[in-house]
Image (cartoon, rainbow, N blue to C red; front, side, top):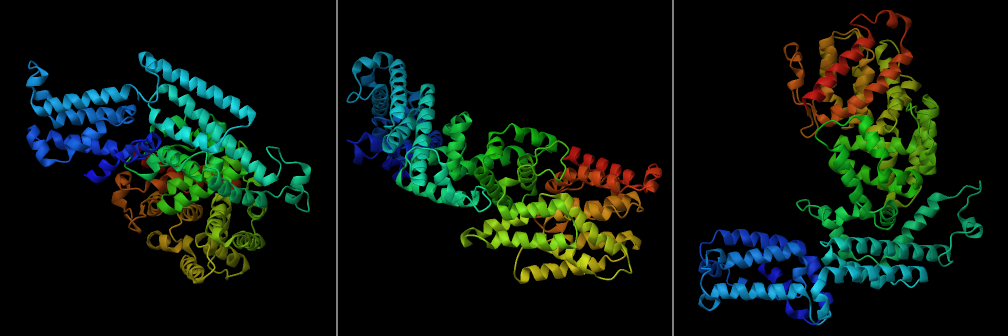
Length: 637
């Protein structure tokens, strides 16, 4: 137990400066709560007051200091735990209640004195508040809050708000957050802080105090084609926001730390301030997101936890429904800057966790913002302006064609985006470029189709078309510019050559080749691997059902942590395959791809296929087999 730190929280160094004592109390309140809880549990293990004082000789003086702290009792939870510690430290429960105070043991007398002092200081600080207000403290607080809110409105209209005063009021309000009446005040103060930041940004950026941009001021941000240069504006905006937050701080670091407690300490629950924040109107939230990336990041991480990382499968329709009702998504639809920040943060979460359930969420976020359509057609990029120009060009290439020239153009467009910018942001831009093609599974499928059509023909020589597709897949797997890409391309080429003529090969050899090598071949890229699985299955409708499922399960069973397939299903295991350990993040993403695969199969279905629907060898029946198999897996998870 950290007694020195606990003692410093109640030090008399600032006895004459309640604002500093308050600031220390707010900063240390999470620690104080945990310390008092641990101390209480330790005291419960003692049998007598003498044992308590012997084990914790420093406790008496520090608890005395805490009981006379003028602000401590304004925090209900701290006050409750302090009272519990006082009672347990003296074993008050075992005292003789019939004896007078004078006849009680010294420890009980000390405890009662401490409780009296605590109650006295909790009523009011007699140096700062009129004693007449003690009669109705709640009414007094309500009147003061209403008066302060009214004053804030007046100063906002008169343009006389000051960052320093707003910051101090916000910090002071934290200690009263447990009172319902204070919540309205905190919301109002945050709104005032955002207003100050917005006005300062407008003034610094446009040079005209509190005025919107004019035709003249936007001229420098317009390119030759007459289109607004959002990239230059976004870059300048981020730089100015950092400058404004450094100079003018209407929201303190203390307030931000209190809001984001649960992000700083995984073992700590969400703060009451965070729950209050979740109830604020969208314009306050979006204002905070604009100026404080950490708040936006916390919002996104909560969204990931609530949607992507649930233990049970959430269908694509349910994810879309939750996102459509999300303030975050609604804001991204109209704010390019927020969309790009969200895209970056979720990408970073995917890379840091390696959990492809996060990729599912990223895919649906991207799709919800970029494609305002009902049938999910790939060509409906209605919000393509949300992307930087080079990525927008890449999307046009992805959606407009799928041939040898398009693969080369796409790589060049993505590489141009990666290297045409600030070197400090290159890592993020590379991540954006890598993820963009993965947002279009049909494009990947068509690319893999070129490879497997070549593999299915034993006599076709390596040519320009297969070469372009091979390099495109290699780049999507390893978007590098050094020998790592070369090594990756070598592995993929060896694997492709090993699959030559796979349609006529023994199923067991194909399954073995696929199960043992796909993770290394595709560098752990689950999205590419799953679409590759669907592509190869579309060529193997003549296989028996058990072989078909076995090939699929080599992917769905893969253990990403140990980087090896969990098992290869044999004939005897097929009937009980759903009891084997499946990788849920892979299964969920695969299930999302099935409708896309079905639509592509319908487009390529031949007349012979239509007449063979009752045959086990038809692709329609294989699709039904796979769908039922995956449904069984999801039901068993």
